[in-house]
Length: 107
Image 1 (cartoon, rainbow, N blue to C red):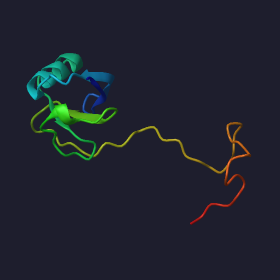
Image 2 (cartoon, helix red, strand yellow):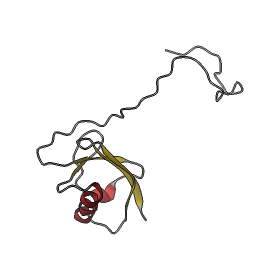
Image 3 (tube, helix red, strand yellow):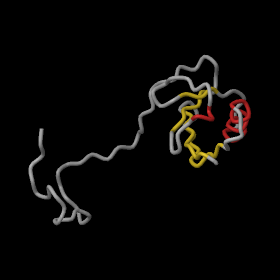
């Protein structure tokens, strides 16, 4: 069974969505595939909280994996750059039949 993940390389600002890992692939082969796809010579992989991944075969489907391109690269926690903030206005996609519609926010 294949697992699909997202690769994010912060130093080159490259993202590869839909990277597939087969169940029979080992960690070294997956790293070779990552280097080939991102056109880099070195690849180290980390979780979104900047902890090293030692076995890519155990990743969760849909997970984002951070890729470092140098052995001395300092990896930081993953945080998406594009965020949408809610300012309190309601658009056409809000349904007035849903529970909680029009009620104040609970603190």
